[in-house]
Image 1 (tube, rainbow, N blue to C red):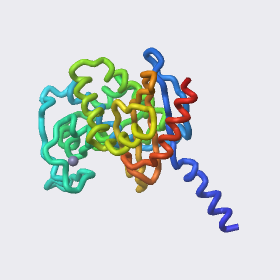
Image 2: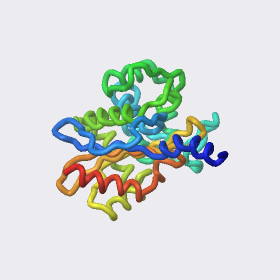
Image 3: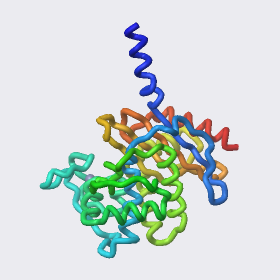
Image 4: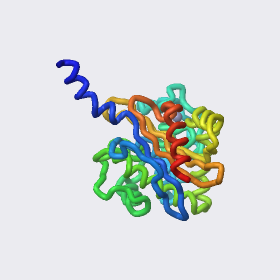
Length: 262
Ligand SMILES: [Zn+2]
């Protein structure tokens, strides 16, 4: 009996273990190809950094692209980067590629949370009811409520549309997301995906959050199939970091997606 109760209680957790939304770009709109557990919710974490980057480039007159910051891993005020030894000298595109928390903490100091939320809601279909009293908002943490995977997916669709405008600001952010796949947090995963499948990964971003004392990882990928069609995958996994999700499962989703997508 005890075992039965234990199993019943752990079912929701097991069911929530991973989730994804795989989409294909049709004309100018994304169509869902496959999805699972898309109603799970979490803090978006570092998936928000590209939006913070756009906000800085478009709205902060004091910010310039070449600006460099030295990440020591931890500053005198105790603010930490996820990489304990630090990332060294870092600029906007390398901070996106390596998801440097320290860089984003430093550059978002003094920015208005109200203006950022307004900017997100106006331009990226960010949920209207969300607010935040914490500067961690710029790193995708401490929002007034977690986002449902579908909401994060929609937000990233709008990010893609913004990147596609190919102006100098869009190119700069895109460079960071490309760099993530070549030398940043997605390097190993992308090498494996490209070695073991027909997909080409064009750009992406990882995210990790610990808001409920459980590590939860996100991977966002912009992909191209052999016929040059564009797909995006938003993948979530409980109990891990964004760069360390289960590769076999990711490949499985992509393989099934390619069959369904035809
Ligand atoms: Zn760092």
